[in-house]
Amino acid sequence: MDFDDLDDAEESLGPTAEEIRAELMKKQVPEEMPGAKKHPRPSGKGFGAGAQRKQKVLYLHGPGSNAAMAERQVSAAFKNLAWVVDFGIFDWHFLEGSINNKVEEIHADPAVQQVFIPYGNKCGDTYDGYLSYVFMWNESHQDETWLGPSAYNEMMSSGKIPEKGSYTEVMDALAKHLADTGPYDALCGFDMGACLAFDAARLAQEGDARFEDKFRYLMLFSCRGHRAMGKYEQGKMRPSAPLQIPTFLSWSEEDDSKQYSNYEDLALYIHPKFRRICLHDQGHRPPNMQKNSLQAEELNHFVDKMQSDTFSLSEAKDPTNALYKEYWLPLLREPLPQTSGPCKLIVVEDPLGEHGPTPQEMLADRMKFPAQEMTETCAKRLDVYRLVTDTTHNDFSSAGASVEVVHAPFSQEHRKLKWHPEVTARDASVAYAQGAGRSRWLQAEDEISLSWESTRRCAEELLEGMSLIPGESVALVGIGAGAHVAFCLAEALLKKHSVVTRLFTVCAPTVWPWQDAPVLGALVNTPIRYLTCAQSVAGPPWRLETATLGEFRHQHFDDKAGMIQMVLDEMRSMNNKGGGYA
Image (cartoon, rainbow, N blue to C red; front, side, top):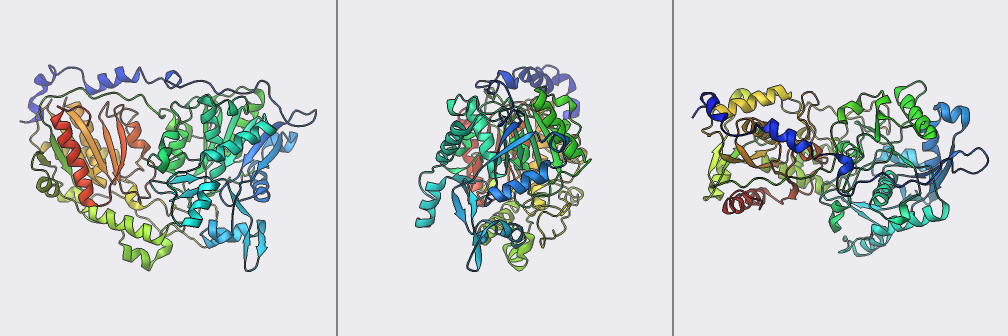
């Protein structure tokens, strides 16, 4: 049956996807979500010492740093701000971490080691005195988990991650410091320190009295949140509602220490009316704000507004603010209406088939891959990605006799499209160089370079070749770049009044083109599953997470067979329950 011949029939199928989304979006009011409230700030301002009533700011440093390095960082970031130069407005305070490392233990990149050496203590042939608040186990991978000093010491003595974590002791120590030395006008942090500052604001919103009335605003550089699949259920430590505290956020898309989508993801947990975003091009560092630059102007303006207590997002000049303005997390999640009868599974293979670097290629040119990543971990994820992208519809058909599988066949023209960007090697001989280039954490396969217009046209052409009936229930599974096409297929099917009961995205790219990108809730209440292996270095899938007002889950598999079984098991369970949640 041809979709084009059914316009009259479609009119009788009820409200359109756009109409349903419009109704559901009326519920999505960030400041009215359960758990939402304005940040409990101290009364007054200017808590610094002396009669000048300077703004008292607590700076929390990054991993493997110390007070000497922290003082250098804040000097570089704020030295060209008029409020600092003309009025010396800040009264800085520093809190050091308690986990001590040698330079090579905490900074894997030799170029980074050279930057930090002058701030450490000579001890034989090496240097120590590089302090951290937490140890980030499996850093920048899907199950990154934050360990406090006790758990870190246990791990170092036993050689394995403890069964129970102790991250809460870190926040206990910060709470005590705030009680002993606060209140502050602001918490300012970089990387790990910024993470703690953000968690302090989260706990204050949740009603933890230790963090209430302790600070007025945040300045966060390269800040990220807890990973959804972190151990000890740390994924549940993300805010239950967007934080309503004035926050300046800055990061670099050239960050060679993290996937920058981590910083995007964290920013969404600040209420859109309370966040100010400013990008820089100096990699993984609190940026050296240059005189008369947009970055210095934006930060100076933010500080000005914090001094007068008249913060307003509308005055931001960095265009980045407009890009993220209509996105936030978390969202209220809607159930999927029950459907009658089993649904089909449309399989969208990777249009490029098996591809990506091999473990052997990684071993031959290790510097093309993240310096901080363990070699065996890198090899595992590369091997899994190649096996997964070799998955075909036949793999699902042969494994799931009780599930009807529909093939979405790509043409040769589709396969020849430029799905991923061409990546040039980064100059890894220097650290923190301005304009250093693409981060090694952002693999080409994790980014889609094809325009939305081209991808949606590809999806429409695939749809024309499939025998589907408007209004029937279907599920989709997309592999690699095929997950991006499956997303567009779901968009198209919803417009045709089909019920998309699941969208499974396997090793899906998490960096999408901005132009014509889907709006928040674009897939209405379609449940989305984001499936990866734990070793994946793809950043948080906030694009997929904000694309649906239905249920969103992040799940892990170990190999290709496990991934296929995971999809088919949920399909069978869903079909047995008539389309409801598994």
